[in-house]
Image 1 (cartoon, chains in turn yellow, cyan):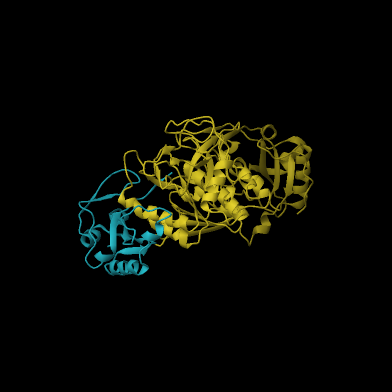
Image 2 (image 1 turned 135 degrees about the vertical axis):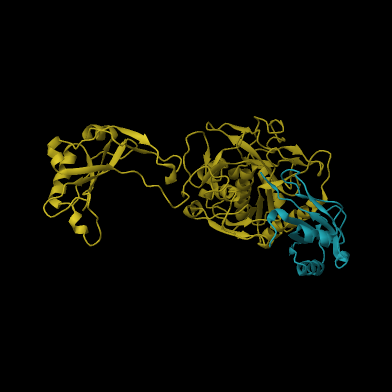
Length: 459
Length: 117
């Protein structure tokens, strides 16, 4: 049908969108008749009289109502909330849908309460033309997860990919055309759900399993799915393989067989404790990690969140701790992370370097995609978490950028580049009360990885 | 009826190699690589008994129902609550390699789920 030019009012938070139904005329019927039952066969009977719809729309516009469209059954309109209240003689209040509606936690409806006063506007005799007007609410999305990270206002959090990429200084490297293209990164973890976020970002994302696990499609924990977003934030062009794992020794072996250039692991065993030696049951895993490094694969491990993490304590891996950055861009060590002198590997200080990690009590710091209904979900297929589990993959992403720029780099070259170009952190303490001081320390290692400076050493 | 995951025992079997029993490092890792044929012999023999196992570079990673594990490796297991990142099972004595594969086996250890950091 016809349309009229919308007035200049913009739809924003204070705007009310509504549909106006004009009164039937002649042969036409009202959809609000108690015995009305529209079907495809009788639909024409419910079409609004064209001339009457245009007349009503013009009068609405004249009364500062924005008319967006004159449809065959109703007029789509909007106006500020206060205008709606005065025009229709009513009062708008906030409602939550019933629990059974399964609406997201932040979903609210603004409309007159049931039984609230309501009148048809008498201005320009609109009450003679209009039959009803109904506020229209945003639909509840049934698609499951949202493809972009939500803004939760209760506290400061980082969002992927932009915040992570910028603070890690990876964004400026991406602008030079280096995104990890052609570098294969394998991440053994709890599972890798195909969240719409990954599709939206256009990542090369492949989920597989180790031979002792079935179902590559699900991630009941959310840990793997969420933490891999940190990796893809710093290296969006990599060939990513998410490896749902069972036995950890087999996971490392599978990652090697998948011809990984880089392996990143956000887990470990808190066993490298003072006064102990490596138990026999961890030796197969130790051999598997050594095997990976001996084949030229760069292996990153989370240092732990107060854990004496192994294999993160192995000298052959890049052990990743954490640095917290607040909303004012103050950088400090965080009381969430580990930092210790290995007992099993004398002279080995953990961590080597750091990525981003939140603070206690829960390191609720980065908004990350997860499978709807999983343990780590906060709302709408998104969670808020971090830990050194977040730091390791984001550092692994920087390793991938270096590997793209210079494929001949060895694991040790990469570790040294990251260490000597990191941003020194001199404020704060870690969970083991180790202070960040000028130079390398047990709080953050050599500091926060700086992708831009690291890249300067190879370009 | 299949065993629940809680009744499964996750284990690693390391196959003998020239460097077995010595500390491993990047410099010596090749001495810890066993013959792939020996790994395959162990795998086939255990698989024939219904044990799910997969070859690794140094042996096998497997899982078996508790009674099966106990009967093959001649030990008694008890479930323990040693906390996250620790094995769920404790053996009364070190698991013993059965005579059929004894000549190839360096050690059998019970594994654990890692902690997520």
